[in-house]
Image 1 (cartoon, helix red, strand yellow):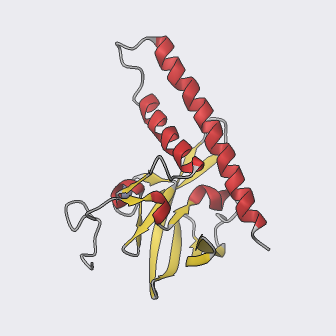
Image 2 (tube, protein in one colour; image 1 turned 30 degrees about the vertical axis):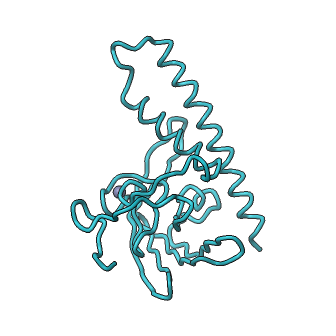
Length: 190
Ligand SMILES: [Zn+2]
């Protein structure tokens, strides 16, 4: 412990964590519940079973979110930059910018009391014990990466279109399971 970094090449975490074992923040949920307005401050709690595993205070700035949290009895804070992308059908999407690789991420995971993206934190999704939402989300990103790369010359259009169809379905699944998640969270709120 205390090597202090998930930076490339230095003190990389030695083993993979499972997504469901880590504390994470999902900017899509915060957006859906209307928490991303500039100047907004809110508290967020993680629960594991019936126990509170951690809590976080967030203040939303113009292009960043400041996170303050206590984990294992120690206080920490981190300012995460946010970026916007345009949606194909109008509106915008907000992303975290991973503080390590600066890539866009909807979800940041905590490790050694710092947040970074799944790749930088070496978090893997377990296909057996992960939630349906996590599994759909993993598939969604895999398919998105394939589509982003475009159709290889050797591939038949029919095959590429099938991938597009699957992406569409997965995207609907992700949205649906995200809505269920948000509804569950809202139900637990007073
Ligand atoms: Zn990263």
